Image (cartoon, rainbow, N blue to C red; front, top):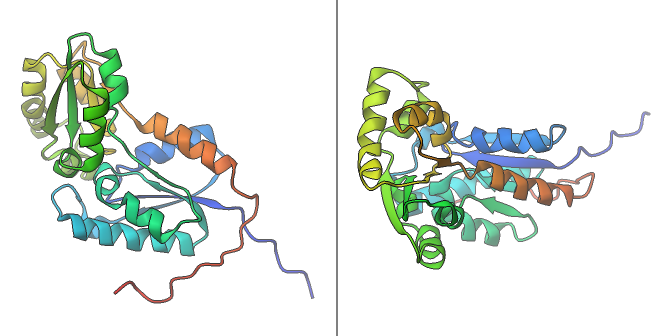
Length: 242
């Protein structure tokens, strides 16, 4: 009888409400092209930005349970809205697994600002979340932070509409108050938004846009390197959460 195959290498699990988290997953795979990656998107509840906190938290916990059951030993919450409400719960649910989340890039934006005004382009969830409040209070004392909700941006990206007249009108409308406030740079506080970067740059020439995806990918890659080379899947979730 042939010997049983060895356990597979550990996987990094990425989750988001839709395709936005792929911006982080692709940055991770540029750094670790041979890594085993699993990605899950909660299209049934996309977008998360206007959902109640408790709904988003419950959905993200379920997605994380599924990824862990499939052998993920690193979780990347590649969604700013989910990170704003669910990171503490995930770390409590999975204390033996590193959990990486998205954080508004207020600190580097404040350091780079040439005008004294920093734009934060994000979802309503992110802008009212604790992470945004804490990072703004800690790192933005010397600049003015101008928040703006990217209304309709997630839907544009999910539908693949990145350059139509309707997309241009929606993006122009959201950018207008940030440009009027002379914001530079503008932080992309949602993982969907990097897919709109060509249009954003066209409509705001000369303005720098900060995408935190690379920084999050570097952190995830460093944690992935510390995982054991093989994993035995000890944790299963045969029953759904109540």
